[in-house]
Length: 310
Image (cartoon, rainbow, N blue to C red; front, top):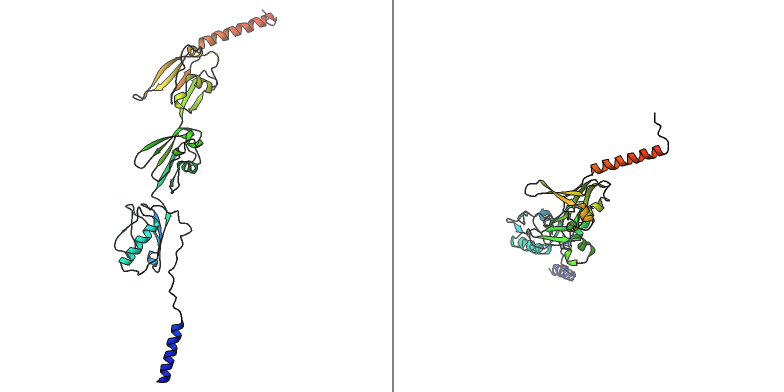
């Protein structure tokens, strides 16, 4: 008995000398494709990792009402409005309360945001919809759309989720003269780059065509003629602006006295977007001049003795 007691004592002492080191909790690093942490919203894709619980260690889509449906839990978890770290704490408490895990280690990250779309449309090179991040701005949105195209007008309309609309001058935004114009985007905005208004110049001008108006309030008949490189010969004294009536959708004819404007006896006439400026040809004057040129040619021919009468 003494021998057995001695052996048991030796074994006990041997075990007592071995230090007991508690097992460290597994650490979960953020997945390499995780997005920057910001408030979770409806339809976002959440990546969850739970120690010793493979049933919960995968991605879950937040429902349209902002809640998560998870295996092993008999009720839905509100996720919308929480930061990933806050959702980690909530899930830890839920797993403890349900008696599923004694000391769960939970890691949450966002794999895909769908709750904060921003659309960029209008006069841009590449219209698109993207998800706003915490540092997204109006200039960032235009850069994602590859910039504005040559048809861009003077203003950008930013429509917020609540319906509020802000009118941002494009030139001031791009030159940075007012940093406050570079709005922070939180999701739900529509950014519309307005197209420049267009005027149409036709008739007896050197270069008929469609011309963009860079500033709708400062386009006149003389500027329109300059854009079309001026009048041809034999123009009439009167030109005409054809302007659409919003009530009837028909165009009204507005006479313009070119001679008076060019002589600075009448003020220049303003032109609006979608106006047509028509400069008629003075056919009677052209016919008269053609006749005079033919007579002049006839006189030169006879004077040189080339014309022979029979």
